[in-house]
Amino acid sequence: MTFFSVSKLSKSYQSIPALKDFSLQMEKGDFISIVGESGSGKSTLLRIMAGLETEDEGEVLLNGEKILNPKKKLVAGYDEVKLIHQDYHLYPNSSVEENILRPLLHYDKAYAKSRLETLLRQFGLEEFRERLPRQLSGGQQQKVAIASALAIEPEVLLLDEPFSSLDTIQKHQLIADLGKSLKEMNSSVIFVTHDLDDALRLTDNLIILQKGKMIQKGNSRELCEHPKTRYVARLFSPINLIPDRINNYLRPNEVKLRTKGGLLGHVIDSRFLVHYNSLRIQLKNGGDIWEVDDPARKYQVGDRVYLLWDEEKVMLLKK
Image (tube, rainbow, N blue to C red):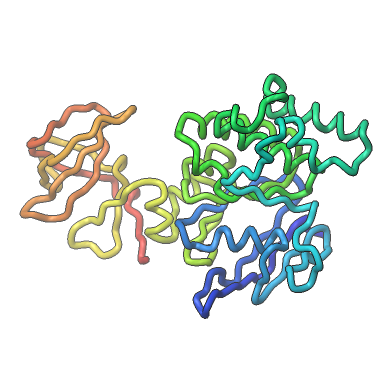
């Protein structure tokens, strides 16, 4: 029996589809990232999984038991399935310790104390235990929120873009810390985001969602090298349409820059990035503008260049 399963979920709002026939199966301890643009149905999907939203069709099962929606359950939601938002929902006048302990108020005191100490250690919050939320950074507050959600050891943790309000440095540090903590707990985790980089920092097990529909799943290499659509391809990098060829595309790093031979163009912009210069190249006679990587940092704005590539690197993307 599958530990956690979602079968043919569909949901519409005012006749506008938010989810279309979405299915997913997870085993205990699985970690999946769902990536999609705003409005792709990610938050709706998580709310249905948590029993907080009513589906039109389909079902969600945890250990073979159906997750009931708010129309079928007096108090919506389940302790076994916890949903975390980007808003921290902390008690402002309670300390870190008190916020984490709050879900454990009706549990055995010895267990609650043990659980508190475990979570403080796993999330690196021991030295902040007496502080109030306003005395913490955004990343620390989000750690407290997640630790609180994990206090009663839910079987499934749903993360709904929990890092979007953090700056880049805080976000990268929190993701690194969280990845380690969550793996220690062996919780099943579903993380949704619009940012592929955030997803890959947590797990290499990806689902791509577009307009409420799963369009591809796999690891990052599979999706990058064999995207099924232009949308999936663009999540990893810009793509360049080869002139006079239908649906044939190249990534910027697959284009070779030469001083003669190949497709003619002129450099119109150059941006210094960590590992290479990113060039914008206007193709001959006012054609398309390509983005091309220049790892040797050789070419300058105004330079005439020729573009070559290996045919085996060309992607055929029909939509």
